[in-house]
Length: 131
Image (tube, rainbow, N blue to C red; front, top):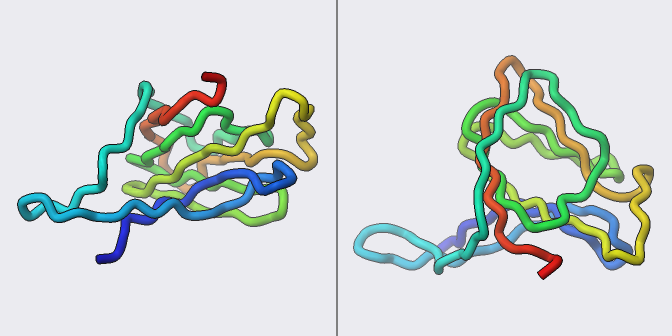
């Protein structure tokens, strides 16, 4: 059975943000295909206007973002980008340890709302890296 695959933004050994995929096996539970339980800490609802954009930043705490409406383009420092439309999701979990100073020319990812619709999304904090 093909697992659920979720695009993930994480860091490589040099703490540079990269895209990868998290794999979550499916289990048949009475006709439903479910993953094992995935714990979370809290969630927030988000709206961003058409054209909204961020500077480069890191997520810090791992956060699952589920897009409900609109399209969010996430771009990395290496020029790679991915578009996430309604019904798609990704996990942002790029971070820097305290001893590394953030440099907006090499670290992180940025996001922008593209297309004709504003963005509606759910942010689910999966864990806290600070404990």
